[in-house]
Image 1 (cartoon, each protein chain N blue to C red):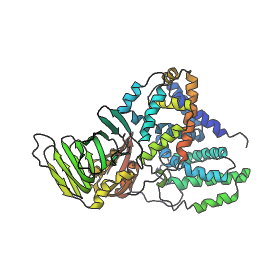
Image 2: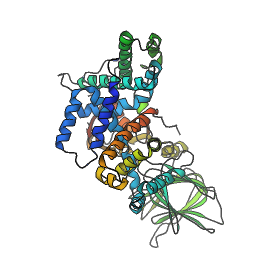
Image 3: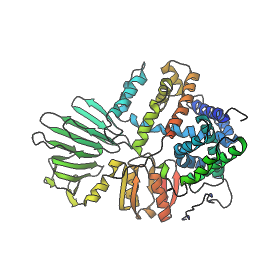
Image 4: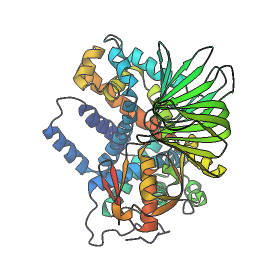
Length: 198
Length: 322
């Protein structure tokens, strides 16, 4: 069942019957194909936004749009699809809020997205991943870091963490809540790298 | 804007769901409420999936617990668990020299033990100027005295660049075999059935240490690729670029030339949690190419595109079949 590679931005019709994609498949695709694009997506959004918070806000709208489309059928290539969604959202904002400059929106065409190698951004080197994890964990506030390390490395439950740290469970929950958000920012902020050729 | 960045509040709520799952009190009713919340909006789903994936990536850190880390963790005092644990994690990185990034060492009475987790890669620069690079899932023990430099490869694969010193021989022991350096660069890979030794530069002697061995010591020259089992040592010649491909892991890559799909899959499976399974019907197909060592997904994609194989994901297995 070889598929014809498609070079346009349309989603490939994988389920002719029009049934929605299973959620688990959409999630796996989102994690594998879309999240690794976050660094380049944020660079693009930040160039168009007034501040970082607004870019993060837009990012989530982009993701929501991408997920909504993926539920119908998984786009053949994630990168052009994500950036096309971002551009459409920016254009909407220009129309409604005059937030971004038209220049920025047209810049998108110069990014040469369509010519990009598929999957380039999601190639990660295992050891790079470990270094990245450590950097992200290091960047957490001390209490968040302790809670997350106790949970993920030592495998303690929430209650056990509370006992060890001598704080109540709701505070542990707060630290994990905070920690996981910072972790996501740090982990996706860096561009995945391709390994050097030998 | 009508609301003050509502997405920020959504993210906080998504993180809250994730945090609550870490507690024993999380139950089916909670899970249903989460499902309902996710179903409300793709914005909710996007925020939740993103955080969940980031949190899930820290799984890799759990790999550090075994085998020695587990001991370190259990020895950590109850009062300051983090400090000790963190000291251990920090020690891993102190070792990272040059390109090598991840692994750890433990001091024992008779030397040092170096180890990498699955997917790890570490470069160790020794005081005598020799360099050892550990590939994925490798354990190696060093015992250096003024008279000798003894290395034991307990499991896995390593690349050696040895500073030759006739007065202080450098030996690598692997099960029943020993490699004695005569000034060289070589790599050693230990698997359940056999030992592979490839020599890039200089020369080295490969010998059996087992009293009952029928084999004679073999002197390896550059380009020699030796395969030793309990009862035999066989040597074949490889071209320099072929040996370079065998060492592509040093740059985080796997290189295949006419490799059978099933063999290529076995290589990927050494480096990550994802397990590639090739059905019998597809195992004889051969493939060429270079992939990152954790590129099992890309590999499956290529197998799909080139051979039209079905790619079936079952948990952590990726099953390739006709």
